[in-house]
Amino acid sequence: MQYFMAKLKLHNLKFTPRRIAIIQLFLSNNIFTPEEIWNRLKKQFKKCGLPGVYRNLESLVECGILAKIHKIDRKRYYGLCSAKENIHHHHIICLQCGKVDDISDCFFEKKETIKGYKLISHYIQLNGICEGCLNK
Amino acid sequence: MQYFMAKLKLHNLKFTPRRIAIIQLFLSNNIFTPEEIWNRLKKQFKKCGLPGVYRNLESLVECGILAKIHKIDRKRYYGLCSAKENIHHHHIICLQCGKVDDISDCFFEKKETIKGYKLISHYIQLNGICEGCLNK
DNA sequence: CTCCTAAATAGAAATAGTTTCTATTTAATA
DNA sequence: TATTAAATAGAAACTATTTCTATTTAGGAG
Image (cartoon, rainbow over all chains, first blue to last red; front, side, top):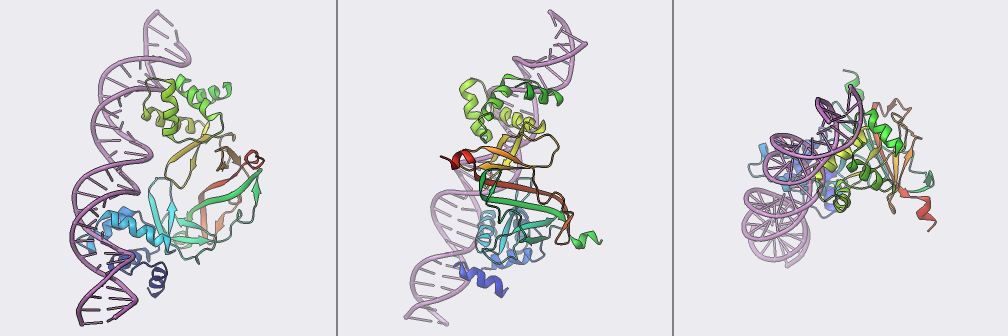
């Protein structure tokens, strides 16, 4: 928790009960949609607004604690991001348990051009089954 | 146009004026959101519904004429897909003119596992500046 | 410990993007 | 030309997300 507190502080964000609860939910290493987070928070806090959840998830991304995960269902997912800040990396998620891991080995990072295009940015999302789930 | 007609036929889709118009818009090689397509179609057809545009774009993807393009702005984009059907490929888009090209050279295609995860699927979106725009 | 201020919050309402539904029309075969 | 599956418009519903306003709170300064 100290680690997260430091990250928040670095970005002038406060260490609120709401945020502690959100971070704790993510410590399971699962990915969640804003609504899933909201449903869980409502059990802990009798007052709890969905817009607040959206805001918190976004600020946690800003300070590098969470990462946005894109799936085909057009919902937003978030997961813990363990990579050092500002280091180019992507994420692989386990389709079974929702676990997220960082992938720093990126084919496109060094490429300057591809098919005549000057590469500016890219987005990679990997989906798989994690070791734990494979061994079940 | 013959080419597209054949693709549509293969999927039991009709060659309607609406679809011809949509395909023609994409022949510029640009990417468009459903709403952008709709705005352009409204000039040609006095009656024209947005749901119909959505349906058409989806069916054109189904038969391999268009590809879905993902950008960060949470809107749906579509672009012409020139790749042969069922061939694993990704897309690179020009951030300046919106041109789309296919990338068949994929680093992850042969990889079976990565970081202990058994790879199931992946999504790659490349953004760059095309040769034409670079030379301007 | 108390005051202060920027940041966080709830809740209501608005917005944006997309989908569903129903009735009508049309393309492309027989 | 008749037939029928597919395509359509338009209205309405729906879902995810954002904006707005007023109130509350965390955490540093004194």
